[in-house]
Image 1 (tube, rainbow, N blue to C red):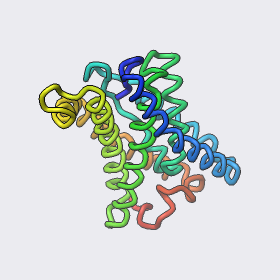
Image 2: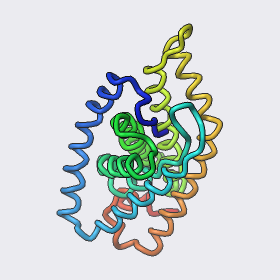
Image 3: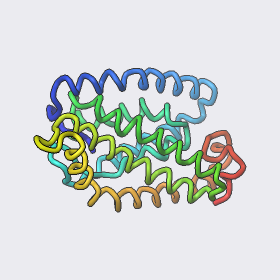
Length: 226
């Protein structure tokens, strides 16, 4: 999903950076407020960042100029809310661009928008919907992490299609091509990420229930049922 350095036209890279900036400011405010109220949650926020860094660094070859990998942002979105994952994802993507040459600085705004904004917000929304429908916590967490992952790649497909429309079929045909190629590797990766996130959340609920009692994933009575 990380679009490589210099792959997007300058105007597209600038537009995605501008679109991501307000969410980053909102996320920084959200994280600052959370840590002022609950400084003991710094460790869990660090765990969420490490989870996203490690999973999103496991890249596989895919669409030219991009790649396939888990995103790892669903866990943090369920623990701290989607806004908190914007600065976390920004730091993860920045470090990967600088240290691993995974992604890039000119494409940072586009990558932040897909992985650190769309993915966490979709994951959190799916989780809340699953809880409202009476799903067990495990099922809601699985669907949230899985669909949050896939939504990131749908967004990347849109970004690439807008930048490189098909000469005949335009943006829509280009989107179908990019999305179709991503699907071969990303669907099984998304299912795997969903299952892994369920295991991590259930382990946290078993061994760190007191620390998690105020977090979205455990705060609602229906969410305490594995």
